[in-house]
Length: 113
Image (cartoon, rainbow, N blue to C red):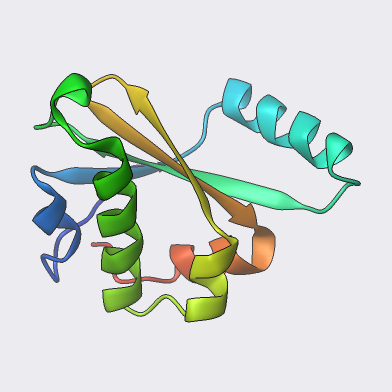
């Protein structure tokens, strides 16, 4: 199911409406391949879709930084933030947030709706 972010408005600072969803099977296959290459540490991921933004129109470095700051502002711990990796993809703007299960559990507990 989809979770609409923005009750706090913090993720909306990035522009547009953020929609969070679990990663697709293809994304999870990439995660598992990365885990095998990295020695098997367990990871998880979630995607935030910013449906009102255009991928080619944003500053990717600044966007990733602002997304991390927004997650921190709504309660994600500094240690968890430090473990996250963000990949931006086209399709409006899709921010794939990936990290260890413990960090991603914290992301899942944030007030995103």
